[in-house]
Structures are given as structure tokens and as C-alpha cells.
Image (cartoon, helix red, strand yellow):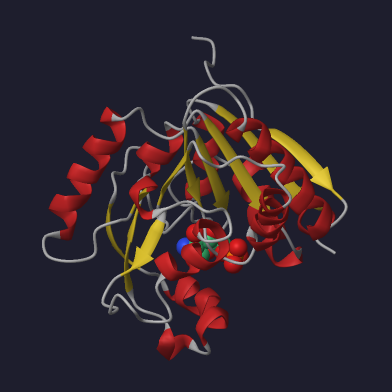
Amino acid sequence: MADPHVEPQVQVVDDAAWLARAAADLVSSVVHADGPVTVVPATGETPVGTYAELAARHARGALDTTRVSVVQLDEYLGLAADDRRTLFGWMDRTVLTPLAIDDGRVARLPTDGDVDGACAEFDRALAARGGIDLAILGLGTNGHLGFNEPPSDAASATRTVELTPDTIGANARYWGGEDDVPTRAVTLGLRTLLDARRILLLVSGASKHAIVRRALEGPVGEDVPASFVREARGSVTVLVDRAAWEGE
Ligand code: GLP
């Protein structure tokens, strides 16, 4: 049977500043297409420049966000709502407030009570309202997307996860040390992400060299969850800077 999947379009740019502008161009074109758009904005350091570029465009009236809805990608478990480490807070500071997206247009992942039950309902509600138009994703050094840690299969649902030592080590730089990184989290599942109409995967810096090559050129499988973007339902753009692509 012929492969029904369109290969990801890989675009190599000079540096992180170019990546931010190219990503902002793509996001703007999706946001300005007809009709409402549902966007998943990853946290993490990679997309921060892109969000700053979008915020600058919004501030000068060049980006209309009134029809944008946002769905949270991932969140730590076990934190108080006002804890400085919540990823919701990070998303609020970098995306929601600068782009004037009010609470009524934000779907926040469940973190209390029967979280897995609430996650199943979250997936159902998201599918019922038409799913994701644009997922802006980063790449974990262990190949995760969101907190879909290896091993994660392509059919995985939105759910609770245990973070791997790799991810706890990588996230330590956000909060001061490994002891400050929660060990459990909730993440949109790969199935939900791979159903998006468009995925924009942002990869920056030499530390991502080995994993971006593995994800795009190695075997597709659950040991490298990001490799499943090669089997995504919609179009996939990988914007990668030269340091990540060449490894220097
Ligand atoms: C984090 C987040 C992801 C993020 C990835 C890469 O652990 N859960 O959503 O995209 O790892 O982060 P960074 O861009 O800081 O390298």
C-alpha cells in the first residue's frame, strides 16, 4: 500500500533569531486564515523567541488573535495553582497575556481529582470541537513531545505520566535544580497531537542535534516519540537551526 503520509518539511535556518521569525510567519499565516483556530503552544525555551516575535506583531497591530483558542500541551502534577513552576503560568506569561487571549478561550489540562478520567473527557471535548489546528511543539533531548516520554506509542491518549530522569535533568535548568522538578505530569497524548491539521516542530541548539536526526532519519517508533511526526495526519513543518541540524 502506498504510504499515505506526507513527509515533514524540514526547513533549516541560520540561528534561533531566524527560527523565531520564520515560526512567527507560519503561525501568523495560520491565525489569519479564515475562521477560528485552535492552537497548542508548547512551553520550554525553544519557542520563547517565537512568542516574543508574535507578541511584538500583536502589539503593533499586525497580528489579530481574537479568533485564537489555546489548548494546554502539558503540565506538572502536585503543584499548587499559584506555584511559580506551573507550565500554565509559563504559557500565561509568554503566550496568553502578550497575545491577549482571555480565559474563556483557554482549555487548561486537569490536575486534580481523577486526572486520567478528566483527561479522557478532555480528549473527547477537544475532538468534539474540531481538534487542533496548529500544534507548536518543542523537542525533548530524549525525543519527547509534550511530556510523551519514551516509550509512548502513537495511539497514546491524554494522560498522566511519570517523568524520566532525562527529562527531570533537562527541566532542572528552568527551576534551579533537579529537586525542584516535579516527577509526575499530565500531557496531551500523541494521538491527539498527531491528529492536528498542522504541526510546527521547533528545534534549536547543538544539544538537540542527535535527537532531531534520530527523530527524522532513524526508525519510527515509541523509543523516540517525536519520530511519529513522520506519520502525522496533517502537514508537518520542522524548523531547525543550523546548530541543531549540523551539531556545532
Ligand atoms: C519540556 C516540555 C516540552 C518542551 C520540551 C523541550 O520538557 N515538556 O513541552 O517542548 O521539553 O524544551 P526546550 O525547548 O526548553 O528544550
